[in-house]
Length: 251
Ligand code: MF3
Ligand code: CO
Ligand code: CO
Image (cartoon, rainbow, N blue to C red; front, side, top):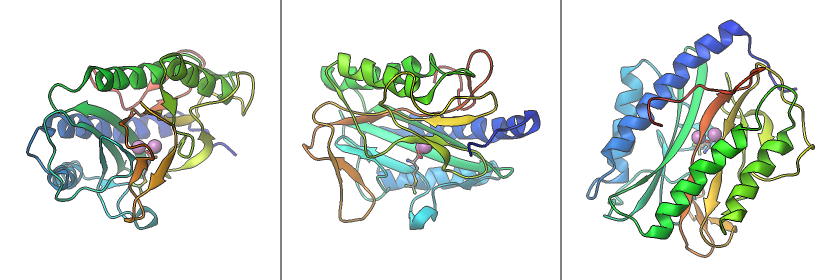
C-alpha cells in the first residue's frame, strides 16, 4: 500500500521538508576547497539540532553519518570524514531531516569552483531530468511515466542512469512504498494519487551505469571511476501541478 497523506499530514510534512531544504542550502554554501567532508557532517548535526530535528540517516541500518556526502566518482551514501574538498570537485550532499515525526529528504550536486565542462553538463542534465520526471507527476499518471521521462532525458544526453538505487515514498518513515526507479516504460507501474509523497532522486553517471560499494560497506562509487551526480526533492502528488515540498528559493 502506498500511503496517502491528508491535508494536515501535508502541512506538518511541509515544515520538515522546508527545514531540510534550508539546511541543504546552508551546507551547500559551505562547500569550498579545503573544507573536509567531516566538517560538513558536523555542521549538519548543528543545523539539524538547531531546528529541533533529527537526522533521518544517522543510525538507519547502522549508517554512521548525519548526512550523506559523496565526491566525484562517489554516487551516494558517502560518509563525512578527513577527506578535503579540492577545487574542481563535484560534491553531492543528501540530507534527511525528521521534524514533528515527519521526514524531508533532499539532495543537491555542488561544484567546488569551476568544474570541467562535461561535469557541469552532468550537473545540469541530472537536475533537468528531475524536472522532466515531475512534469509527468499528477494524479492518474503511472510511475513508469516518471521513470521513462528521466531516463529519456539522461540517455538523450549520452549519460547513464544508476539502476541499483531508486527513489521512494517518504513520510513518517524514510523509505516507504513505492520504489521509484529513474528508468521505466510509460503506461506501466502503480497509478499516482493525490496525497502521495515521493522522494524523486535521479543518480546520473557520465560514463557507464555500473556501481560498486566500497569496503566501508556504504559508499557507492562508479565502477569506471567517472563522475556521478544526484538531485532529489520530496514531492507531493496533487490533482494539478506537483508540489515540491523541499524547494527553497532557487533550488
Ligand atoms: N540516499 C538515501 C535517500 O535519499 C538515504 C540514505 S540512507 C543512509 O533515500 F543510511 F545511507 F543514510
Ligand atoms: Co536523500
Ligand atoms: Co531519498
